[in-house]
Length: 378
Image (tube, rainbow, N blue to C red; front, side):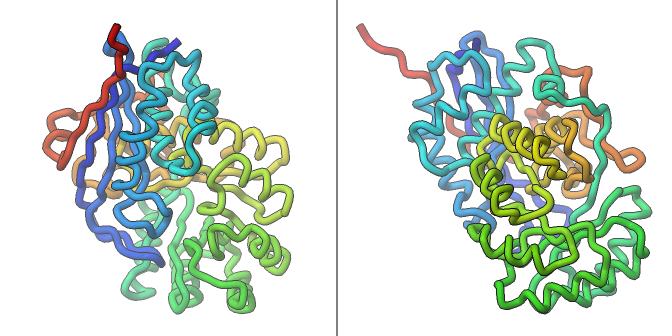
């Protein structure tokens, strides 16, 4: 039983080591909403909202998430007894439409809190079985194909198990060809369009079949499962959906419509870890490969992703790069480090397995708010 009593919200800003560019825009400084949830005994758990600063990848932003948590989510969670953290997802689902990233941040903090209270690692609490998870790298759009090729070759030298490149109309065939030439024909390569194409681009997208990609990720609009199903039937390249999978129900629709071959599961996008487990169960039942994507998280969000990726069925290397891939300094201790193309799953440490560098967290904080459970007055 957990009874959340206090919720802390922090917006922090961390500059990336280098700009990260995708089809919908460029990120130079990561605005992140960090959440700490405490129970009546003062024990706490941490999580991170994956919403960005602008409504490009998702309608949600740091601003909308902050408002949603303060006005609607916190009043439904604080002071309410939950038998298990998994009970928070259906409790919020009954009363709030949308705002899944905001809901996920609070729910995932409750998972960390509950795991810490029981002395279990989050991986163990979720049913994880791996002690290491394979790591892939996501390379943003570069100024030239040659620059992209050089970065792809560097990634292999660093030990990454898969290379993913961002593509966009006008920046696709030549870029994929350059990356494939740099890493060889047999190394796992995928391309991520972030919904930048339209159904009339089908013939153009079929040209990607020549490069032996592991997958083409989210080529069409995030709401369009039907046209993804049509596109899938015309491509030799396996199709993966990311933005389209915002809930277990959307994953079930994907399966019914045969809209994709692979599912990218991001707990911060789908409403939290309970929803991720439901999607995982669907994927396992229907034999659909899954992997865990990333959203430029700090080490807090990375910890939740690593725990989820330790479950069976996550067959492909995730976008789980070590801390140094994005940050000069992360806000967790120990920082996430890669060895032989894998990250260690901290199965012997309670909760998310890392501690927060509170002094540095405070240094990065640009605003802070604390919410407490309301007590009735006699």
